[in-house]
Length: 93
Length: 381
Ligand SMILES: Cc1cc2nc3c(=O)[nH]c(=O)nc-3n(C[C@H](O)[C@H](O)[C@H](O)COP(=O)(O)OP(=O)(O)OC[C@H]3O[C@@H](n4cnc5c(N)ncnc54)[C@H](O)[C@@H]3O)c2cc1C
Image (cartoon, rainbow over all chains, first blue to last red; front, side, top):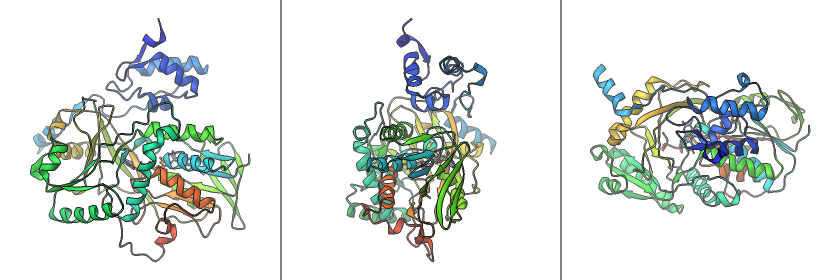
């Protein structure tokens, strides 16, 4: 399959080709790639692309996969509506 | 290793300083950063670009920086998009005092060539229809304010500086700076020793620590400021909406998501950058109150970053009389991203002994000696 057609990050619509191009430019850590391609910043928070990119980085940099650091996990773990937070606060008081 | 100049920190300030120096022909510039590209405040910021300030200094720095951002994509020859969007900042007043203060601010801004205007609540609602007009007393608007992608702008400066020969070392912490006979002689990092007699302190939240290495006491401190991002939606809001009295800034970025933040008056000084429940609660209340339809958006991520605050909430861009060869770019007080083009230009002029593009007396560290800071910046969140 053409690299252009392989989606590596569904949330932000990033292809394998874009990922490989950036790695060739010298951006070979998840944190750097995230800042430029937005992988891991979408609604799944890197739960889908994290491992795929980890494997690509391991292959590209010739590093054992367990040594490749992936994204920082940040709250929230699932999207919550702002007004639901406000409602929860009102219900508490 | 030998270097003409060592820059500590590769946030937006450090990369801009490196680029401006290299553009002026300085060779052997070395930049150290202990993080990833834009891992400090730069990659954590709201990335708003505002010229509507309450002090003359901040107005001028912002205006001249906007002039650079307008041509940055070409000047830096960047292959990706820096996403400069100029759809303005809508500054919301909610009290009588603010109404009066904002009229004064706009007068000052206009006198400096900044095209801001005072608006009635109704006029404000023409620009942002989903405002809660019950709490708005007046507003000001400057159409040339806006937003940039902090990651790609930093990357753009970094790549341009690299093309001009600047050497960057990431994940490389500066551990000490050796001074002998009141002269800098060496910078020591985890893996290198660099012979140099010029050091630029662009270490953001850690700039005070870098000052301490050479015995220069910089009157700044750091404080966690939190921020969150929502899921992306179709475009509904052009400008950044900001209110000092409500304590909120909120904008929709070109990607479609909303980014919003506020300050916590009880935040202790320090280096913690954790995300808190308390922030999420307060942010949700404030945002839904001012911009009710935003309540339907899902928050997907929240984080924190360091403001580096100076006593008058204006930056320190200066040399240091007590230690020749030591230069400062710090104390940005939560608005150093938008000033970066001027930070780089002015500091390069100071280092090379050139006449500076704007008067830098009030940006000098010496302004804090025997001062009561009457003219401090109040237009901050
Ligand atoms: C939540 C939030 C929202 C903000 N919103 C805005 C906004 O809308 N508009 C705006 O203009 N500004 C905003 N700011 C402020 C802005 O982010 C900063 O003023 C600006 O990014 C400062 O850039 P810098 O390069 O000086 O510092 P930083 O980006 O922090 O860079 C300093 C670098 O130095 C490195 N460093 C520190 N110590 C060492 C050492 N010993 N050795 C090696 N490296 C070291 C750090 O790792 C870091 O990468 C915001 C800040 C925050 C936290």
